[in-house]
Image (cartoon, rainbow, N blue to C red):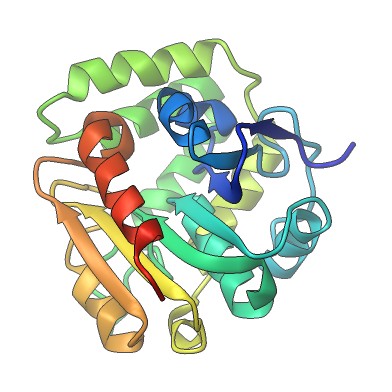
Length: 255
């Protein structure tokens, strides 16, 4: 089985990549306005949704996506999807005209010189808990994503509905993709990404601290940041109108 991609709309191609444990449906509330202007490609990352699993190594992931997606597209990557989109822009630059990164980071865990990130113990604990109860662990992860958001309950209902009505990734896929989040480090690669790049962060994000924006700008002259102050890890769900405006302005800017 190939990577599952839901295509909608007409116009310039726009690729949407979801985060860990989710699938292409996470973007559904935005699809109608987006499809009015662009050809939308909602991707199920390998092992998620309707896509077959594969080894969670960035070169393998971008090779599989490159085989099915158009070149010269706008890429929007949220969380884990942002890491994959960064890798595509770095190593397959002909595919990425512009890069919009959402609540993501080139390195998800802390290091002595990288403090705006999660401690490794947080992700390691999720990995250990997956073996005990996958669904309970995923629901705890959902709660962490909306923590501190002013619309947390509303977002949590949306996320629970998605979780209950979608195929749950296997434990192997969840563990492998979690391991990627624990080990990937694209900080050095950011400087080689040549396309215009915008990093959209939520000021209340408990997973990707907002301070990572300045850290990334120190690594890349091509990267700009925008902060949605009331948002947590899901700014496109909690503040869709503002997010869409940011997205349109970024895409419409002349390069």
